[in-house]
Image 1 (tube, rainbow, N blue to C red):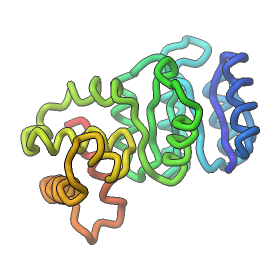
Image 2 (tube, rainbow, N blue to C red):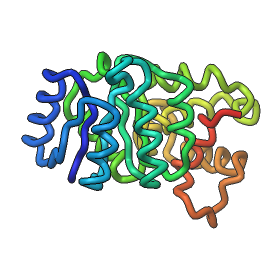
Image 3 (cartoon, rainbow, N blue to C red):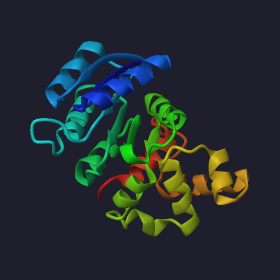
Image 4 (spheres, rainbow, N blue to C red):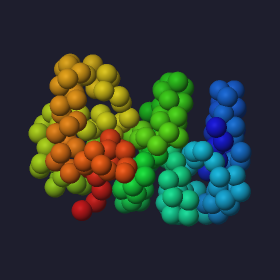
Length: 213
């Protein structure tokens, strides 16, 4: 799997590159700024990208804006944002761009390498991987979609946004697999995501929930 990374911290970038290479991934290029990242994506057409939010020269939101631009130029490009910060405005725009393959993890909360690699694989495959704190901050700004869901459906959808499968949902919520299936079906129905939708309904449900209105 070919990867392009946007990270200006040399130690962190080198560490990620070594970790990914030793785990069987191919790091095509590490860019230290937004312009270099966009050029690298054009050159290598990676299977997935890892992007920090804050990059030179201003260290504000250059990275996540570059990720949005990369997905505009290359629709469906998988992007995993890896940062210390939740940039709410542009995060909402990134996560609301249909097509799947998006994630947002907080550096300080990654405690296990296998979980990070699993999240990277999910994003590369077109799924989602969101840190619970990111979900909480983004959903706090969007109360309207919540009005159609029950408390349990909100819990199910929040865990779906983190990238968990049905078996994990059932275990975390202490309910049966059938109950999980029913709640997800209700969510699809309330968001009007029918079986004929071209997109992946699970991804579209999460993105619909996070989309600004």
